[in-house]
Image 1 (cartoon, one colour):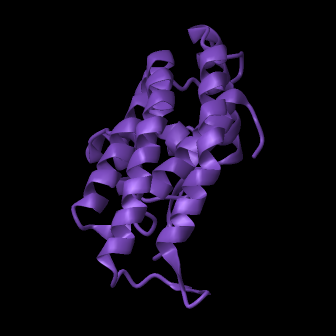
Image 2 (image 1 turned 30 degrees about the vertical axis):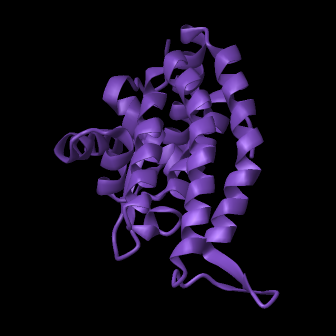
Length: 209
C-alpha cells in the first residue's frame, strides 16, 4: 500500500528502483544484469522513473543512473510495505543473521584472492600460482554452498531475492572456468553481488550498515 502523496512504484518499476538503491550510480547494463530484465525494458523503466522525479541520469565516462532523494524515500516506503504485506520479516531477518555469519569469511577470502604472503610479506596476487588460486576457489565454493541455505530462505520469502542466487552461482562458475576477475574485480563479481545483497538486506529490514 502506498501512502497518500507518494509516487506509485510497483512491479518492474520497483525492481529497477530498488536496484539503484542497492547499487548506487550504475549503467543501464548493470541494472539489467542485476534485475534480470531485458535492456530495452530497463531503459523504459528508468526513463519513467526519471520523469516521475525518482531517478536521474549523470553523463560522462563515470556517469550512470541513480536515485534522487525522492526516489530513495519512495523505495524505502515501498520496500517496507512489501515486507509487511508478505509477512516474512522473521524469515528475512533470520536469513540476514546467516548472511552476517558468513560475511567475515567472505571478506577474508576476497583478501586472500587479492593478496598473498611471499616470504612473510603480503604482496599482490598476480595469479601465477594456479594451486594457490585453486585453494581459494575451493574455500569460496564451500562458503557458497553454505550461503545457498540463506539464499533459499530469502527466495522462498520474497521472489525478488531469487536473482542473487543466480548471480552468485554464475560468478563462481565463471571464476572456476578461468575468468578470474569474477571473484573480486568485475562489476558482476561474486564480491560485487554479495555486497549488493548485503545492501538489499539492510534496506529491506530498514537497518543501517
